[in-house]
Image (spheres, chains in turn green, brown):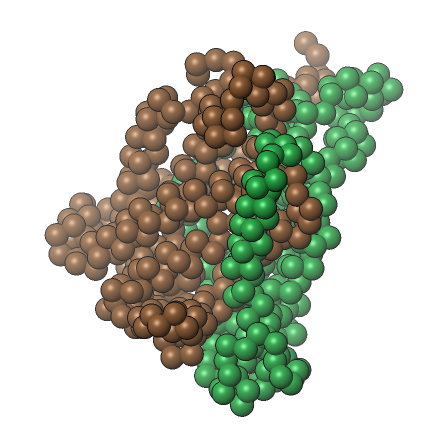
Length: 282
Length: 296
């Protein structure tokens, strides 16, 4: 790992550690406390809500929360939507980025900057007409409105990250493959994709987070409880069992945990995939 | 004339076509439609042209519109500067050569891995006035904490505080990536010239990082105007509309009261405000954003 103020004064170093440790504690406390609450019995929570390590570990809350609402179903729905949109974003996004990074065509730069500009458009402007489109297509209360948009490149920022990474891969590799008779598709799949692990992991993580966390989309489009995602289910759970905080926290942990596990495995690639040279104007 | 498929330009265009089609269907088309709707009264069943009436009513007869705008402005003014500074400080700390950096990175990033509904539920708890963790901690120091989510004077601060929990997220990662992209040679040169840590930061790090900072500020402001889920889950806009944020009020008008014309007008007012703010920032950026190798 590169560093900027390398090996500073020992006093500086102590200060850095102190700040890092206190910050890390501050930032993880709500999380640890959620976990602790989820593992407490109702009585212990009522008498001693602030305690971080429960006196008695109780796993009953998970069971109760899991069975009070069809959370297994919600989880399955969410996984299905998330996996589909993540895979679709990575694939179509990298194709678009390949087009923007390796080819010359009319209006390429204009289209690229238009794409970047869409990042500044608040979603509320397009929300209602998009809702009307899906209503017209009789797709309300289906997963199409949540899934289909990810097949169109998966968002400007992801395409931008992919393009920046592709630009850093030497063009000679493409040319060598082309001399060997590879088609453009083959170059994308066999040359660029295998070299792009870090950025693909980063984009996959961002797409995953966006969809796993998506609340407004399912809120607008899904009506039948069996079709709900975890985020909507969690909200419903709060409405009906809001006073059983231990259980609400247990259900929240179930919502959080898959992401934390995934991040743990992806973090090796995570930061390396972000190449920001293009933010400097070129 | 060579066949079309032999031209690289054709292939380039083909490869970007998923985005282009998506842009036309899900961005450009809907934008025009939404502008059109903003001049109409529309409830999914019937549509009627009303001219500028939606806008006039919002400005002149809707105190909640102003309330929502004011709440959102307060939220933006408090959270964007603090959030940017916080993200930068964390990125600077995480860019140091210290042991256990991976663990620290995970700790700071953790809050942004928490899905927003779960985060809202957790914070509802943190803010609980009787036995929530925040007031319990404050009482240890003899400070009586307010009723965070019931007292309309405290609620805006509660939301701002909650947003700051996420400063270790994507924005920090973008800063960190920017920091790691800075070549060591610049620092070596500065050191040779006798610059200390603070001068290195002021005269190398900050200018070199300014494009990233600019990006974060522009998108940070836009993001802060769209706060929705936390308010929807935690307070539903209350108490006494203290957390009625713009996006929440827009959502209510659109999908609860089915006033789709009015909601579209609100969306375009939001868009206009953000465009104006972004334009001002681009103008101002010429004075503080440094682009390497050119005065672009």
